[in-house]
Amino acid sequence: MKLLDGKVALITGASRGIGNGIAKKFAEMGADVAFTYLSSEEKARALEEELKAFGVRAKGYKSDAANFAQAEALIDSIVADFGTLEIVVNNAGITRDTLLLRMTEEQWDQVIDTNLKSVFNITKNAMKVLMKNRKGSIINITSIVGRNGNPGQANYSASKAGVIGFTQVVAKEMGSRGVRCNAIAPGFIATEMTGELSEEVIKGWNDMIPLKRPGTPEDVANLAVFLGSDMSGYINGQTINVCGGLHTPN
Image 1 (cartoon, rainbow, N blue to C red):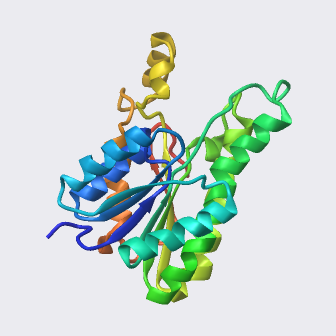
Image 2: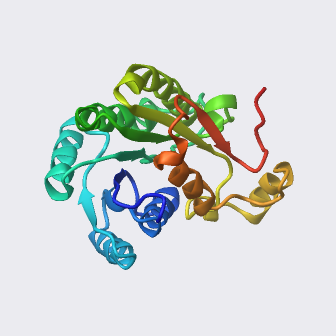
């Protein structure tokens, strides 16, 4: 039996990167997968077919998680299409990196809305379903820079730190209802976004990582599978790093 057999999962921002890796791993592990995307209809339909090849149900929804009304409609549509919802992965995120001295209000608001407000929007609307079922797992994708900051990422670091605090509150409020909430804090992960960096920058990151390599979306997805499965039934309110030892908190 696969770890996620029969479970219905939502993954926001699954068209590329970490979200894409989680969607594929969830389908491989037997979950029916609903996912969101913002732009490319063609890529979304291709991902649907790729996920269905694992013998599960899959559907992409064009939806902006940063918009509360759209998040509410999304959850209603998923329940109508799949019958229920048991795992929520809040993954949607963007960067607008620049030094704080140069950062515009728009750059701040865009990142906070997409990375933090979206987590509130999706979780708030999914809670009614999870509470009714009296079970569920919410997995929030944060970052190690939400724990120790990073120059040029005041907006991103603040948003990801907010996700960690939000995760702890949801875990304490919803635990008695059988709903768990945990966060995953990736470090330097090789994705389309990091692929745009120079070889020198990538080498600099790798030199700092004890394992001497970047992580992969699958590295993050493997932990997401565990947190979404019944094997993690007593893990709640935690933030777990996937960073190759780059950040080792006390």
